[in-house]
Image 1 (cartoon, rainbow over the protein chains, first blue to last red):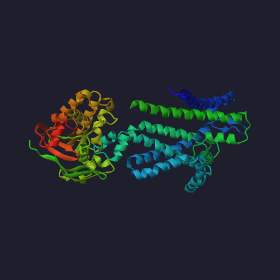
Image 2 (cartoon, rainbow over the protein chains, first blue to last red):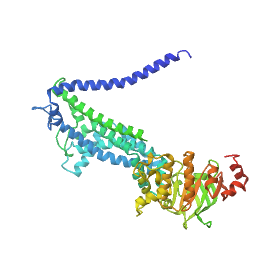
Image 3 (cartoon, one colour):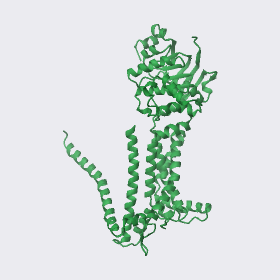
Image 4 (cartoon, rainbow over the protein chains, first blue to last red):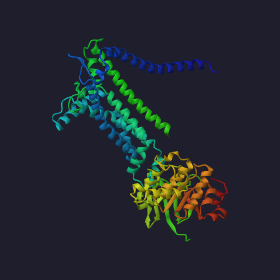
Length: 294
Length: 249
């Protein structure tokens, strides 16, 4: 054995293990912090009031802790962004993997990556100064802060992820399978719609779920675009507040630490965490089933 | 039976970019006969076969010139989608769609709007591919649950369901075990009653067993073409003799 090799091996192993441990510790830490403030909160506020109440006013008297307005705000953003990102993302992927020339692909792929790399706060300004004015021209009663603008911008933000994951899924369809379709005289459109997409269905679904959970967790862009008005409403032209935007509001404001107002932030954070966790688990489960199935 | 040609290739040249893969080939695919295309790896036999139904169109640098006469038209000038409905293809690796057995067979006819009784079509196609007895009780199970040999016969059934004139087979047994191979060979024997078949194979015994005519390719050129018995017992060209006696390849 060469001299010192064993020591290096041990050191490397230790360093790598430590890094891996760090993610575990962080996750446990986050869960601990969230629950350490969430549990006292639910001693004060019955969990049913929180989950099913339709009025959210924790900072004003009389206080009210119904989280549903934040949930509807978040849902508006999620659904709206899905309406944009899912169809555009999947059609972009279809175009990239089946129709585009190598040259087009070499242009569009990097542009998508740039789109994915823009800071979210910039997207927020883009929504406020570009999308909202256009919406106001189209529909005059649109408020300055509105859910539609936020939804559109979040849709644009998650679009690259959907397109890229779907493209990966289409690329992984065996060439032999496509050829089998073409050999029966099918058109590209028929092969895509009836062979490629069904074959990649589970991976497309997983991409959708991951995109949706990102849309739910998105913060800065929606805070800027959709505002901070917790309203139990499904009107996309009004200002809404999402769960994440509420957390920003409390964190940035002068809410004293330790009070019930402060704790709401953690209760909302916990709910958000559980929702995105559930969606990620669902997405991963589908992917796993797909991998095992083939 | 007369030796009527269903496809005639004349002066066929095939290129990948600048590189020529097939040189000036004249070849006839005869009606209700099995024509084997043999030769060492890289001799252009698969390239030629896949050009007959325009499957090479998907290769970006591919180009070809010459004439492939088929049903009074030049395949090179026709709509490839139409060509492929008349000239079916079975591939090296079984490639059933991730659908039920039933839907694998009806998919082609359905997208082309064929108005037929699909139950009958499925039964007849599976019978033609000698698969009916094995799967008749589970037509709606996934095709992916079948064995490799069964999948390949399903792919043949799927091709037959389109009622093509010609069936091209690109090393259809190379991914199969010996028993499945024999079944496919028996099947090819039966299919010649209704179809004209061109089969690429690297297995000379297989060519000798299943084909009526054999074409030997070497480095993109058609070296020798004739009745299979003649090619294997009395080759006219030195290269053919060297290849079939196993001196190279």
